[in-house]
Image 1 (cartoon, rainbow, N blue to C red):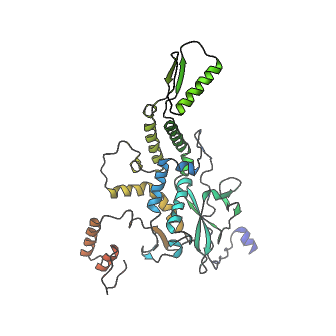
Image 2 (cartoon, one colour):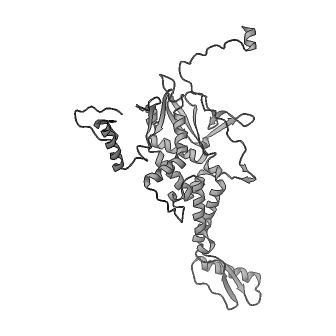
Image 3 (cartoon, rainbow, N blue to C red):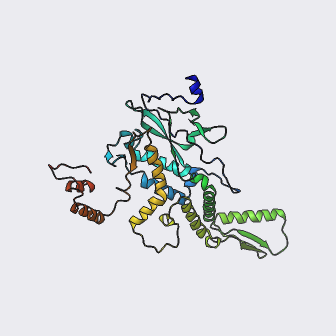
Length: 383
């Protein structure tokens, strides 16, 4: 067998399944982009999350994504026939210390800003070894240890402590699909918006116009000039009436907000941030001229889901549906069709009426579809 093994002709031994499932997949995800922050000679400058949230447009985009997806239920389905299965406890409440919506909201927040999110396993099921409880771990607490080429992650550390590859203390990594987080991709754009906000704040804090004092007479000694400027500055800061002699003239050099173009600049930056976050500008009031194309609320919501939310939905659904968390043949799904994309009552009743006429559903099933309590004594059939 030794010669056959060396020649690669021997049949490899059959590997036995472990007694308990071990979490091995996607913890050490490869580094997709190791080129740094240089893009064609233009250096991106990452910015802190708290600073980015100080920009109203960024906060609005973040809250739109989080407030739509975080409240949605996560349900378990069978892959073969899409039948809804009983929801496991960890899917209803991943972290026993906080509601599910809170854990999902911070997961979405991390995917939005950093394009990656982390859960740490806190409990493991005694029956199959799969995780049964988690805790969200902030991005700034996690450090990946790369190989010497900087192309793959060898292991992760949390608070400078190495994480195991499976079991309690191991990490679940949610990989984003946006090619980098908003803080890295749009660092300069967000910084420009912050600089603009600072300029507007400075203008608001100094309503008295700044300017120069022009001397039309003989030159004054240095000490008199210093005293004159000091008294003038004190009078202006105290909103008192300032006095100048006939030889001195004040010339204002400060422009109004409209003259400086701050209003249009702020609108433009809001539109740029909406593009950065892949959110329609009219959803955050960033468009001055709105499109004349007619769209009802349902159409706008579907466009929002398709163009923006689907990236985050897929990143979370696909990760939670992997076999180290969910048994084979089952998958996890956000209940977005039953909530955010739910049709109006008239449309739903019209569809149900047609299905009843065709015999596709029963009255009891129609009641379940509309969340109506069945009549007493009737048996509710599951769809």
